[in-house]
Image 1 (cartoon, rainbow, N blue to C red):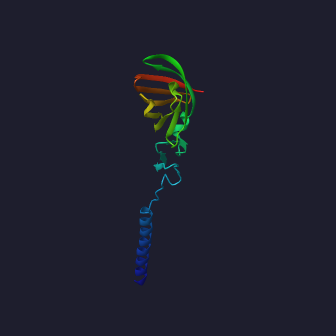
Image 2: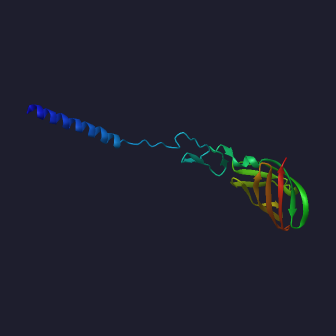
Image 3: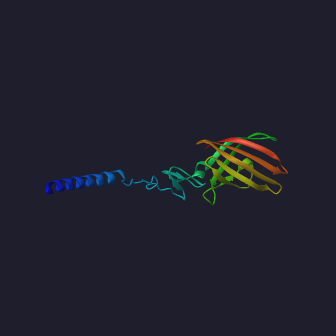
Length: 170
């Protein structure tokens, strides 16, 4: 009889041990891997799901490229206005004082530098600015490709006009 008790006790102990191991294996904590753990988003960009979301002035996989840089340089195009014949125009776009700002020089022969602001990956807004004592200018520059942009603007005041042109990088 003591042998039977010992056998039952051993069987219960073995069953308990296997149950404990089986329970622990089935209820093991799963390790959650953060997809942003090894992603560094520069210039105040934020990571979500392993990809960077950049601030207004930056582009690139890791927000390391200023959006305005692709617009910088000298551009030549045919400027067409409602009240004037098509004319060759040469403009220069340079960096402004902030990361999202550009300076447009020599547009349509104006001696006034215009300031524009990057509003998304393909567009610069040029808010209303005085270009003469009695005229103001407002418009947009749209990125078309590595070699071309589209410039559209309105001139208000003594000289009211609407103009647009495709410009090619020199």
